[in-house]
Image 1 (tube, one colour):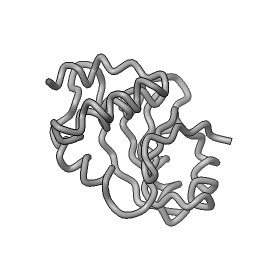
Image 2: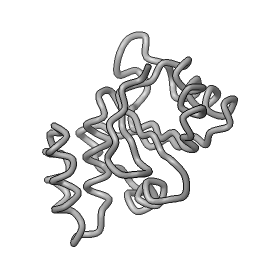
Image 3: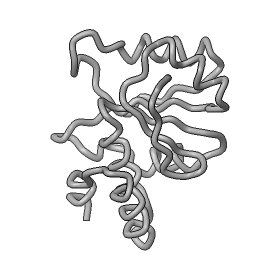
Image 4: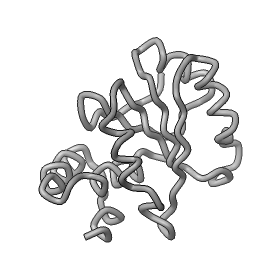
Length: 134
């Protein structure tokens, strides 16, 4: 079973799911999978195309928003915030879930960032990437 960390009622983060985990996510009520991990980070990692195909086959939407420390927070943080805050349950994944948590904090409106950062820190996330976003 994929280890998921719940940030909000509708957003959870995790490390890279196995292809077989996608069906389980659908069974658990998730509706959207967000990939925050570039292809080729680790040997043997399923590609975004493979993950997308598995998600679509399971009836889930798939959003590709890969980032790394060099291009963090990516080019459409507002769009990503809309996905995080949209209808349904969202699972965002990267290598460990940390980038996803940083993206969630960085995507919050300025007034909400301190509370979001407290939630993420209380769950053990290093927020050094989000701190660069002001």
